[in-house]
Length: 149
Image 1 (tube, helix red, strand yellow):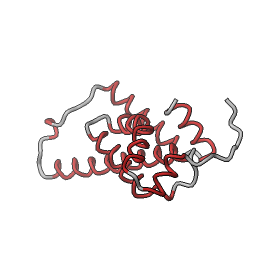
Image 2 (tube, rainbow, N blue to C red):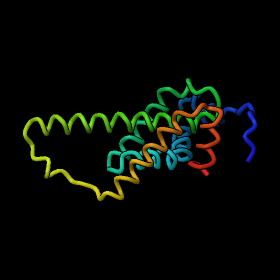
Image 3 (cartoon, rainbow, N blue to C red):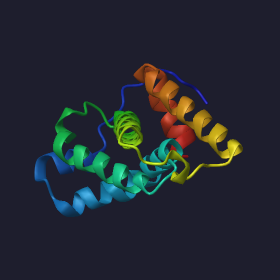
Image 4 (tube, helix red, strand yellow):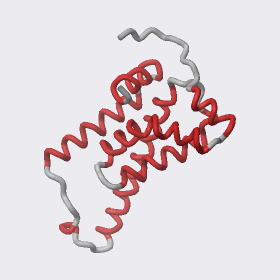
């Protein structure tokens, strides 16, 4: 696979959505990108919060579609946004847990994952964070090839 810097063409669905704000066009965008977004959210959160986080990502896409400059960046933008939304969920969850423990709740009643699953979840989280830190030049092809096939 060659990673020559080509000028990406704007995603036609994104361009159509920007001009029309059509729910049908947006639904097609969601159909196209939801497997990748949901995969990122599930790897980072590993809970029922993943579906809510993925929905939040697409709400942000609806609101900020005009800020995405080129078509190839749609995947990268969605990946970065999914990572950021999930990190906010994790921060919120940790804060809530600290408050509950401080309030005297028994920490033994909280569910624990097996050590192997926790390690795998941490590795996936680190991978998504590292991909998120890549410059667009490398993140875009990585997301397109490895996360969207």
